[in-house]
Image 1: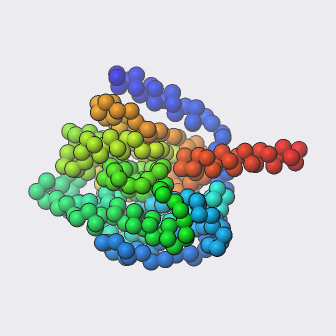
Image 2: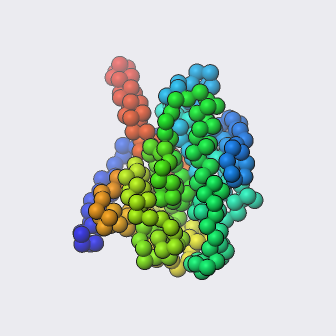
Length: 324
């Protein structure tokens, strides 16, 4: 497919979303409670997990869905949980926000990139000889599946799969999780306002591309089958602060979050075509919003839990009609 034609098609998809006013109310969030627990049933460091419930623990429905919320650069999982709590109560899902502390996971390599490899942080393109591939059990990505099992038991759930949302650095975590965990029980995902991406192209070196990443074609195909929404805020046009987001390789992806998200979606779609597969991903622009998890969260809900979102809108419409 001609790249110019494809880019125009991307714009055609995005323009109705940019113009649309049919978005949830951004003012729903409120401060959360102190619900938290310590999780250490995995090969990595013990992590504190902040959670929010849609109802009291004794009244939880067994089929209540689970959402992992992955933090940005500040690793402030309690704040992220608080900003999602009202949405969890409104739409009926559990929020799990794991805290990967800076002292345990002190850089982009160990958090955004999942701790898959160890190499010097201040190398934009590490020497392949200096890269050490960590044991999979020590990957930060590997905390999610056992944490899900723990939550299912803790809250007496029957859930067989989960959803995942990440903002900023958390978006970096989410899209790489899809690549590196093809067997994960992941139902839907949103990567919001990612600072930079691992592009699915073989001629770019890791961590900006597939060369040296050990991501196979089969892993790519599985990732492209996932229900992923790449979201970006229209006003997120400023520079990002972390090292790898400001290297020449990252800047080649675009000058800001908006262009980098569109570029990632474009490159991923072309990569899926080259593999002879379709892609199940979509991209969405959020109007009147900057680099803010709190502002992005209400928009993400309808992509993560479309059925619950539609049920709520339908119920609200019935109530409104009854009050007319």
